[in-house]
Image (cartoon, rainbow, N blue to C red; front, side):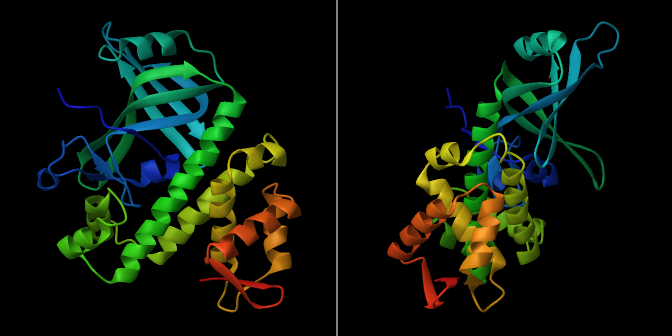
Amino acid sequence: MSEREVARRMFAREFNDSNLQQGESMDRSPNFIVTPAGVICNRVFIVGVLTEVENIGVEGQTMYRARIADPTGVFTVYAGEYQPSAALFLASAKTPAYVAVVGKARVFNPEKGAYYMSVRPEEINIVDEYVRNRWVYVTALFTLQAVRIMERAMESGLRGSELERHMRAFTADSAGIARAMDHYQVSTGLMDAYRQMVMDALATIVDAAPPEKREAAGDGMALAIIEDMIKRLDRGDGVSYEALLDAAHRLGYEESAVEKTLNALMDAGRCYEPRIGILKLI
Protein backbone atom coordinates (compact mmCIF):
# COMPACT_ATOMS: atom_id res chain seq x y z
CA MET A 1 0.00 0.00 0.00
CA SER A 2 1.50 3.35 -1.04
CA GLU A 3 2.03 6.10 1.52
CA ARG A 4 -0.21 9.13 1.57
CA GLU A 5 1.22 12.23 0.00
CA VAL A 6 1.99 15.11 2.37
CA ALA A 7 -0.75 17.75 2.42
CA ARG A 8 0.78 20.98 1.11
CA ARG A 9 0.04 24.43 2.45
CA MET A 10 -0.82 27.17 -0.03
CA PHE A 11 -2.93 30.27 -0.27
CA ALA A 12 -6.16 30.32 -2.25
CA ARG A 13 -4.78 32.62 -4.93
CA GLU A 14 -1.91 30.29 -5.85
CA PHE A 15 -4.26 27.30 -5.72
CA ASN A 16 -6.83 28.93 -7.99
CA ASP A 17 -4.12 30.15 -10.39
CA SER A 18 -3.18 26.50 -11.01
CA ASN A 19 -4.37 24.57 -14.04
CA LEU A 20 -1.48 22.22 -14.85
CA GLN A 21 -2.25 18.58 -14.08
CA GLN A 22 0.45 16.07 -13.32
CA GLY A 23 1.50 13.94 -16.29
CA GLU A 24 2.62 10.34 -16.62
CA SER A 25 6.12 11.42 -17.58
CA MET A 26 6.82 12.53 -14.02
CA ASP A 27 5.92 9.11 -12.62
CA ARG A 28 3.08 10.51 -10.53
CA SER A 29 -0.66 10.01 -10.30
CA PRO A 30 -2.64 12.13 -12.79
CA ASN A 31 -4.43 13.61 -9.77
CA PHE A 32 -1.44 15.80 -8.97
CA ILE A 33 -1.42 19.47 -9.89
CA VAL A 34 1.53 21.81 -10.39
CA THR A 35 1.14 25.39 -9.16
CA PRO A 36 2.69 28.50 -10.78
CA ALA A 37 5.34 28.43 -8.03
CA GLY A 38 6.28 24.88 -9.08
CA VAL A 39 4.73 23.07 -6.11
CA ILE A 40 3.60 19.52 -6.92
CA CYS A 41 0.43 18.93 -4.98
CA ASN A 42 -2.05 16.09 -4.52
CA ARG A 43 -3.38 16.95 -1.05
CA VAL A 44 -3.75 20.37 0.58
CA PHE A 45 -4.03 21.65 4.13
CA ILE A 46 -6.07 24.85 4.33
CA VAL A 47 -7.51 26.95 7.13
CA GLY A 48 -9.95 29.78 6.66
CA VAL A 49 -13.45 31.07 7.22
CA LEU A 50 -16.33 28.87 6.12
CA THR A 51 -18.55 31.49 4.48
CA GLU A 52 -21.10 29.46 2.53
CA VAL A 53 -22.53 25.93 2.39
CA GLU A 54 -25.01 24.79 -0.25
CA ASN A 55 -26.63 21.42 -0.86
CA ILE A 56 -26.37 20.97 -4.64
CA GLY A 57 -27.29 17.27 -4.72
CA VAL A 58 -30.08 16.20 -7.08
CA GLU A 59 -32.51 13.29 -6.93
CA GLY A 60 -31.57 12.37 -3.39
CA GLN A 61 -27.80 12.50 -3.98
CA THR A 62 -25.57 13.91 -1.27
CA MET A 63 -23.36 16.75 -2.51
CA TYR A 64 -22.41 19.88 -0.60
CA ARG A 65 -20.49 22.83 -1.98
CA ALA A 66 -18.71 25.06 0.50
CA ARG A 67 -16.55 28.14 0.21
CA ILE A 68 -13.63 28.76 2.55
CA ALA A 69 -11.94 32.16 2.50
CA ASP A 70 -8.34 32.97 3.36
CA PRO A 71 -6.76 36.45 3.08
CA THR A 72 -5.97 35.94 -0.63
CA GLY A 73 -9.13 34.38 -2.06
CA VAL A 74 -11.61 31.53 -1.74
CA PHE A 75 -11.28 27.74 -1.87
CA THR A 76 -14.23 25.79 -3.27
CA VAL A 77 -14.86 22.50 -1.46
CA TYR A 78 -17.14 19.65 -2.59
CA ALA A 79 -18.21 16.78 -0.32
CA GLY A 80 -20.50 13.95 -1.43
CA GLU A 81 -21.15 10.28 -0.78
CA TYR A 82 -17.44 9.45 -1.08
CA GLN A 83 -16.60 11.99 1.65
CA PRO A 84 -19.25 10.98 4.22
CA SER A 85 -17.69 12.54 7.33
CA ALA A 86 -17.05 15.85 5.55
CA ALA A 87 -20.55 15.86 4.06
CA LEU A 88 -22.04 15.20 7.50
CA PHE A 89 -20.01 18.08 8.93
CA LEU A 90 -21.16 20.50 6.21
CA ALA A 91 -24.79 19.40 6.54
CA SER A 92 -24.95 20.92 10.02
CA ALA A 93 -22.24 23.59 9.78
CA LYS A 94 -23.00 27.15 10.83
CA THR A 95 -21.45 30.06 8.96
CA PRO A 96 -19.23 31.94 9.41
CA ALA A 97 -16.79 29.67 11.23
CA TYR A 98 -13.05 29.01 11.23
CA VAL A 99 -12.33 25.57 9.79
CA ALA A 100 -9.30 23.45 8.92
CA VAL A 101 -9.48 21.14 5.91
CA VAL A 102 -7.26 18.38 4.57
CA GLY A 103 -8.30 17.16 1.15
CA LYS A 104 -7.49 16.24 -2.45
CA ALA A 105 -6.80 18.94 -5.02
CA ARG A 106 -8.91 18.67 -8.17
CA VAL A 107 -8.91 20.41 -11.55
CA PHE A 108 -12.14 20.42 -13.57
CA ASN A 109 -11.59 21.21 -17.26
CA PRO A 110 -15.05 21.20 -18.93
CA GLU A 111 -13.83 22.89 -22.11
CA LYS A 112 -10.67 24.25 -23.66
CA GLY A 113 -9.31 27.18 -21.67
CA ALA A 114 -11.73 26.74 -18.76
CA TYR A 115 -10.33 25.42 -15.48
CA TYR A 116 -11.98 25.20 -12.07
CA MET A 117 -10.01 24.28 -8.96
CA SER A 118 -11.62 22.57 -5.98
CA VAL A 119 -10.86 20.49 -2.90
CA ARG A 120 -12.42 17.12 -2.03
CA PRO A 121 -12.16 17.05 1.78
CA GLU A 122 -10.89 14.07 3.71
CA GLU A 123 -11.31 15.82 7.03
CA ILE A 124 -12.88 19.09 8.25
CA ASN A 125 -12.68 20.45 11.78
CA ILE A 126 -13.71 23.61 13.60
CA VAL A 127 -10.70 25.65 14.75
CA ASP A 128 -10.19 29.04 16.40
CA GLU A 129 -8.76 32.35 15.24
CA TYR A 130 -5.31 31.60 16.61
CA VAL A 131 -5.06 28.42 14.53
CA ARG A 132 -6.11 30.38 11.43
CA ASN A 133 -3.52 33.09 12.11
CA ARG A 134 -0.83 30.50 12.72
CA TRP A 135 -1.71 28.83 9.40
CA VAL A 136 -1.36 32.17 7.61
CA TYR A 137 2.11 32.71 9.12
CA VAL A 138 3.42 29.26 8.29
CA THR A 139 1.84 29.25 4.83
CA ALA A 140 3.47 32.61 4.20
CA LEU A 141 6.85 31.12 5.04
CA PHE A 142 6.34 28.13 2.73
CA THR A 143 5.13 30.41 -0.08
CA LEU A 144 8.14 32.71 0.22
CA GLN A 145 10.44 29.70 0.10
CA ALA A 146 8.72 28.48 -3.08
CA VAL A 147 9.02 31.93 -4.64
CA ARG A 148 12.74 32.08 -3.88
CA ILE A 149 13.33 28.64 -5.35
CA MET A 150 11.45 29.60 -8.52
CA GLU A 151 13.50 32.78 -8.77
CA ARG A 152 16.66 30.69 -8.48
CA ALA A 153 15.35 28.57 -11.34
CA MET A 154 14.72 31.65 -13.49
CA GLU A 155 18.20 32.99 -12.76
CA SER A 156 19.75 29.71 -13.95
CA GLY A 157 18.62 30.34 -17.53
CA LEU A 158 17.92 26.61 -17.93
CA ARG A 159 14.77 24.89 -19.17
CA GLY A 160 13.26 21.42 -19.37
CA SER A 161 15.23 18.40 -18.21
CA GLU A 162 18.38 20.48 -17.64
CA LEU A 163 16.50 22.74 -15.26
CA GLU A 164 14.97 19.78 -13.47
CA ARG A 165 18.37 18.19 -12.89
CA HIS A 166 19.83 21.51 -11.73
CA MET A 167 17.03 22.16 -9.21
CA ARG A 168 17.18 18.71 -7.59
CA ALA A 169 19.82 20.09 -5.24
CA PHE A 170 17.38 22.71 -3.93
CA THR A 171 13.91 21.16 -3.87
CA ALA A 172 11.93 17.95 -4.12
CA ASP A 173 9.66 19.84 -6.53
CA SER A 174 12.33 20.11 -9.25
CA ALA A 175 10.10 18.41 -11.83
CA GLY A 176 7.27 20.80 -10.98
CA ILE A 177 9.57 23.79 -11.30
CA ALA A 178 10.62 22.74 -14.80
CA ARG A 179 7.06 22.17 -15.99
CA ALA A 180 5.64 25.31 -14.36
CA MET A 181 8.30 27.52 -15.98
CA ASP A 182 7.07 26.60 -19.46
CA HIS A 183 3.36 26.10 -18.81
CA TYR A 184 2.72 29.32 -16.87
CA GLN A 185 5.41 31.41 -18.59
CA VAL A 186 6.65 32.27 -15.10
CA SER A 187 8.04 35.80 -14.84
CA THR A 188 9.64 38.03 -12.23
CA GLY A 189 6.39 39.99 -12.21
CA LEU A 190 4.38 36.92 -11.18
CA MET A 191 6.79 36.07 -8.37
CA ASP A 192 6.73 39.69 -7.18
CA ALA A 193 2.92 39.50 -7.17
CA TYR A 194 3.05 36.37 -5.01
CA ARG A 195 5.51 38.05 -2.66
CA GLN A 196 3.13 41.00 -2.33
CA MET A 197 0.26 38.56 -1.81
CA VAL A 198 2.10 37.12 1.19
CA MET A 199 2.73 40.57 2.68
CA ASP A 200 -0.92 41.52 2.20
CA ALA A 201 -2.06 38.26 3.81
CA LEU A 202 0.12 38.88 6.85
CA ALA A 203 -1.12 42.46 7.12
CA THR A 204 -4.72 41.27 7.50
CA ILE A 205 -4.01 39.49 10.78
CA VAL A 206 -1.87 42.10 12.53
CA ASP A 207 -4.68 43.19 14.86
CA ALA A 208 -5.51 39.60 15.75
CA ALA A 209 -1.90 38.58 16.43
CA PRO A 210 0.09 41.01 18.61
CA PRO A 211 3.87 41.36 18.09
CA GLU A 212 4.75 39.19 21.08
CA LYS A 213 2.84 36.27 19.55
CA ARG A 214 4.40 37.00 16.17
CA GLU A 215 7.90 36.80 17.61
CA ALA A 216 6.92 33.53 19.31
CA ALA A 217 6.10 32.13 15.86
CA GLY A 218 9.82 31.65 15.38
CA ASP A 219 12.89 33.56 14.15
CA GLY A 220 12.62 31.74 10.83
CA MET A 221 9.44 33.62 9.97
CA ALA A 222 10.87 37.01 10.90
CA LEU A 223 14.00 36.31 8.84
CA ALA A 224 11.91 35.38 5.81
CA ILE A 225 9.62 38.41 6.11
CA ILE A 226 12.34 41.03 6.70
CA GLU A 227 14.57 39.57 3.98
CA ASP A 228 11.73 39.71 1.48
CA MET A 229 10.85 43.25 2.52
CA ILE A 230 14.40 44.34 1.68
CA LYS A 231 14.19 42.59 -1.69
CA ARG A 232 10.80 44.13 -2.48
CA LEU A 233 11.73 47.68 -1.42
CA ASP A 234 15.18 47.76 -3.03
CA ARG A 235 15.10 49.62 -6.34
CA GLY A 236 18.80 49.14 -6.95
CA ASP A 237 20.43 51.44 -4.42
CA GLY A 238 19.48 49.57 -1.29
CA VAL A 239 16.76 50.26 1.30
CA SER A 240 16.90 52.86 4.03
CA TYR A 241 16.54 51.59 7.56
CA GLU A 242 13.64 54.01 8.10
CA ALA A 243 11.71 52.67 5.08
CA LEU A 244 12.24 49.08 6.21
CA LEU A 245 11.18 49.91 9.77
CA ASP A 246 8.03 51.64 8.50
CA ALA A 247 7.07 48.60 6.39
CA ALA A 248 7.79 46.25 9.29
CA HIS A 249 5.69 48.35 11.67
CA ARG A 250 2.70 47.94 9.36
CA LEU A 251 3.00 44.18 9.91
CA GLY A 252 3.23 44.64 13.65
CA TYR A 253 7.01 44.21 14.13
CA GLU A 254 8.61 46.39 16.79
CA GLU A 255 11.97 48.06 16.17
CA SER A 256 13.71 45.67 18.58
CA ALA A 257 12.49 42.67 16.57
CA VAL A 258 13.64 44.30 13.30
CA GLU A 259 17.07 45.03 14.78
CA LYS A 260 17.43 41.46 16.04
CA THR A 261 16.44 40.06 12.66
CA LEU A 262 18.79 42.35 10.72
CA ASN A 263 21.67 41.33 12.97
CA ALA A 264 20.87 37.67 12.29
CA LEU A 265 20.75 38.29 8.53
CA MET A 266 24.10 40.08 8.64
CA ASP A 267 25.68 37.37 10.79
CA ALA A 268 24.48 34.80 8.23
CA GLY A 269 26.03 36.78 5.38
CA ARG A 270 22.66 37.46 3.71
CA CYS A 271 22.52 41.23 4.21
CA TYR A 272 24.96 44.14 4.54
CA GLU A 273 25.17 47.94 4.82
CA PRO A 274 26.85 49.48 1.76
CA ARG A 275 26.43 52.82 3.56
CA ILE A 276 25.34 53.67 7.09
CA GLY A 277 21.58 53.35 7.33
CA ILE A 278 21.23 51.61 3.94
CA LEU A 279 20.54 47.88 3.69
CA LYS A 280 21.09 45.53 0.78
CA LEU A 281 20.84 41.78 0.28
CA ILE A 282 23.89 39.81 -0.78
